[in-house]
Length: 293
Image (cartoon, rainbow, N blue to C red; front, top):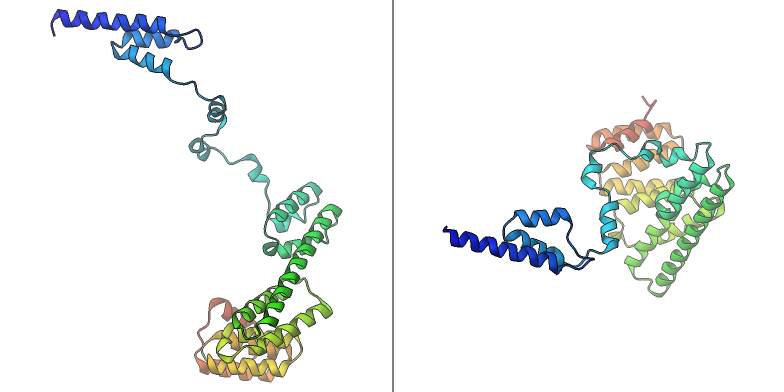
């Protein structure tokens, strides 16, 4: 590169620096450090300075948000949040003597799906803290009201379309969930179980699978109709000889009836049937047969 080219570039660099100094207003003037950077970098330094002057100023809200926002990478390598060490399971929170802790747990339950926390809400409604008990009772009452309204709507739909088996199955599932929630007692529970038995009896044979058959057997047993429950479970063992569920229902019926001889006969039949036991099913079986020689 000859001397003429070098002097030409230096002259251009000087002109750009002077233009940069004169071009900025009082609000957009570059700082001393930025001007030093532009002066030390030939040609490209002043061009970067012009880009800084011509760029629109950043939004204050966005800039503040970037400053205040916590770095997720840095946070992942730091110690846990201080409140994490003080958290406890919800079941234990209601046993703590601090009313404030119990109320905070209740507020969390109210923002979640009540159907997933029925047992906790039923426990909380007898809490010695009046506010905790009040909100638990109010939530359960509202859940019960909505459930009964949904059941009434399903019942009306079945009244209009009695041959709609899909609607009947949906109605049966709703009643089963309502019964197993534990909210019903006494006459109301008996009435709901009677309605459930009626709908289960109206299902065609090809629509009644293993789960529905076991449900009907348990429901009949709860209604005190032991022989009918045993007949349903026996029919299921004939249809599904290697399934564990109907055999467990038969054992439950024998235990409920205090039929020791029947349990012994069941044990022999099960040994000959080649039942495919699951881990939980085998635990239940051993529990029912405990003490039977």
